[in-house]
Image 1 (cartoon, helix red, strand yellow):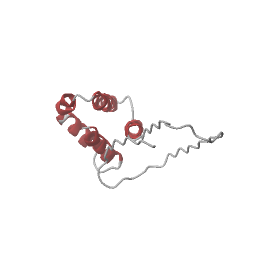
Image 2 (cartoon, helix red, strand yellow):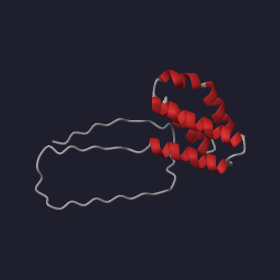
Image 3 (cartoon, one colour):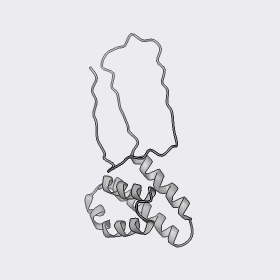
Length: 121
C-alpha cells in the first residue's frame, strides 16, 4: 500500500495527475489504507489529507503542498543500511563521506520498495 500511495503522490509531483486526482484517489482508497494495518502508510495518508484540507481552506498554496508531498516521498525513499562487524579489523583509521543533493531523481515507472538484509562475513 505504501508503494501505491507514493506512486500517486509522485505522479502528482511529476504533473501526471492533478492535486484533485490525488485527493480523489486518497478518499476512495482511505478504507484500504486503514485496513492495511501499516501505521506508516496511515500516517502519510493522514498528513497528505491534512495538507489537502489546508490547501482547500487557503492556508497553504500549491507550492507549499508540493514541497510537503516531495518531503514525504524523499523520507520514504531513504535507504537505511546497518552493518554489523563480526571480526576485528586491522585498520586504525576510518573515514566516511556523505553527499546530499537536492535535484529531483526522475524514476520512469513505478516506485518499488525493496528490503535488503546484507551480511558480510
